[in-house]
Image 1 (cartoon, rainbow, N blue to C red):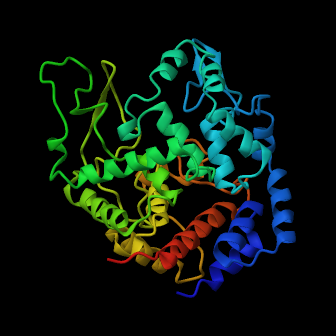
Image 2: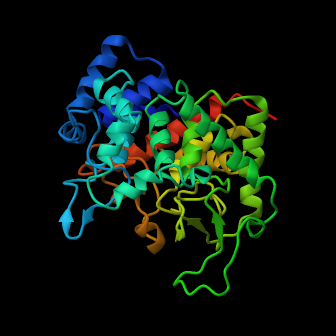
Length: 377
């Protein structure tokens, strides 16, 4: 479709992050001098400057990762950016170059066992969490799954042997889904348990896909063979065929039953401007499109058609915020790039166009990823 109206809207109204990513990733018309100019503007944005203040001498950013906000009444983080994962997500979404010292040093710290041991000892619960950091790696629900995925998101996923190994683990999770016709074939159930939420569960060593294993594959290239691309296509389509909307699942880790981080045990919904499905709605769709298989995945094709229809008027993507469910999960509430929200690139939503810029850039990004997808069955 003709997206010139969308592009003109962003060029006129968007902030430096969207301007930079639009020109570099989609338009392909960014000179080296303009790139330097936009990056300097990004480095002056409030959140980037805030993040700079959380960089430690050893290169790690903040305290912990996907961790406690407070401990026994003590506030641990001044803001959510004082967390290793949230900080890495901001650097990734802002497309800060991998050679920037903050990125280089944060990745170096994530690959240094002594630094990590020190960083994950700031409160008592983090010590055993670090000692068991590989537990449940096969389904993406471990500390190391986070650490490997964030390195990939910062463009350090293909060159490291340990991170490449997690790529293979991530593929095995999607491949495991193809072996079943129902989630019940994987899960166990303890009828005698007295837990408040006695859900079916899988063991910690079971392979299963989740938002981290998807992101690991989306941000890396080494695994991309025709065989793997076809497997992922079939697996994602299969998930939407066999999973039930009311599925629930726990993971049995070290005697505890924990809620998985966005395990794909329910169908994924195609984008619809009238339905905001969950707190993570556009993000997994984007990462599936990043795999390069979008032309073969049913929900991606449907999402493209719905986006094109939504843009067909004035080129601006708008969502329906009137329904109660949509208000609950509205992207208007996104402030920091935590694991539990969609992506926001505008520094604030004070202007009338800021949210619309975020949504419209996402629409263009999604259509672009679909257009350049080079794998077909």
